[in-house]
Length: 182
Image (cartoon, rainbow, N blue to C red; front, side, top):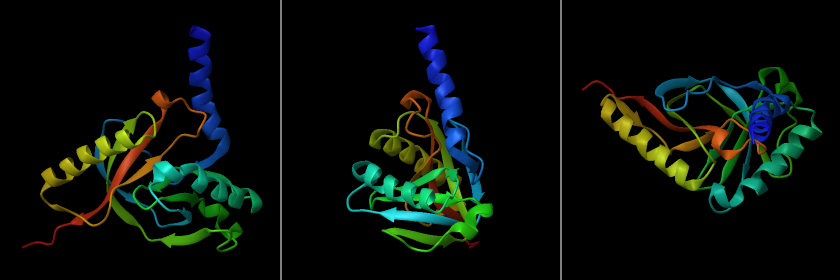
């Protein structure tokens, strides 16, 4: 049993860094809520019908084939819009020149710097975990008083598919801005 646990921890610790070249921004620590500014960047988007949890495999593979075809390194995290299934891969700044435009349902988006409230968490990438974290995050934002929500909450996933659910890190983000002074 001890050998199995050591193997699983090693796999989750080393498998994703071997797949992912770099982080687009620092993760929010599990159990912590914070405001953060996401950098401007180039992201690859794949959309599909239904919600993310019904479509994640269908969204992932076209994005993965795109980065393989253009020799673009994998970057973490992966962003997921839940209700209108969308998955986003960040493109590392040093890899942007390799982006060849829209292909096979993958859309290139250039996003400006964004301000978000973020809640870090651990666990499987499930609807129940997302919903629970989203409600905690929205409650925290409402308690702040000076923040205004400007968009839908979405998931941010840090670990690959070979990481056991109990070791996975994720965040829920909601776009915010400071309320104008009265």
